[in-house]
Length: 392
Image (cartoon, rainbow, N blue to C red; front, side):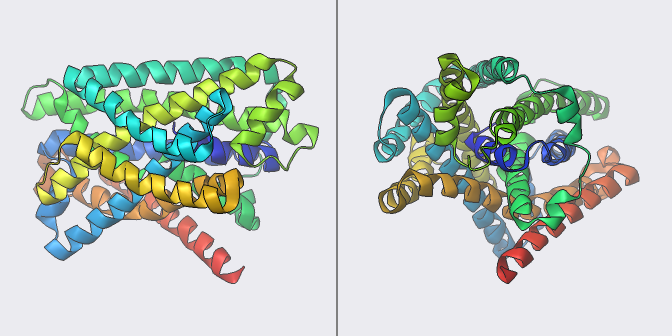
């Protein structure tokens, strides 16, 4: 639940009403399947996806996969920088460029939590998720979307294929939900759990890890659907289909809903989203670098390096094109994540299908067929977007 979900959900809801709820549902179902496979890989092999990619591929292929994953991490960090800077501007009036620079300080927060242990990181993320969910429960209560309208969002699942602009936002939603670097991260963090290192112990751990991630993604499904539903109810149904930026949504929520609390909750939840994804981005970056190269940087060095690469384009774009340019960059970063996704998903599905690598814990033929189908759909959607972009 990072700021990228906000950008795609707000624009999708304002422009197309509830029609993209199908995309949000399908994207979360894809995420549930793939996160479950990542957990299975880590528990069954005792190694994460990056480590196995290094073992199973040539150095050249491994370097390409690492580079693509780093691009995804930077794209995600870009969304975090923009979202957090926007929240600081909306809540405290801090200019976007300065807010982007201040986001570097989140390295101190991550370091403090990491020193206290992994459970502190989990507790912090869980608290932020509860805060975001609570804010949007209140927003939904204020917006009062009709159940009939919500169900209408599932009436035309093929709509994005007929509208290039809708397809672009749909790909952004997919990238914001099924993040490639989170597959690397999840295959690693499941190994921090205590379980018996035998077949039965690993089976038990896989079941609980899959349930754990599915419940978490179910909560993410609610929040992502709530973002789009609030935007559809407040903006689209009032004819404000021009609302395509987070800042516009913040400024219009209070007048349209008739209460200043709506905008305040919106800003607080946006800030929480930026902080939430900061922690996972830092961990994923460390795991990817260590897994592919057996190279471990100090967490603050890794954090400053990644965040610095994300801050620079935000400052440049904001200086040249203003806050509007940064908002466009936010949606683009999520599309980039989707484009990188097949390069993480294909190795993952191939590895968990391998009897040689997984032994008795390899996935069934039915699950493998479902996973390869999901992979093909992701590749096809990205191909359609590229085709539409080139022909535009």
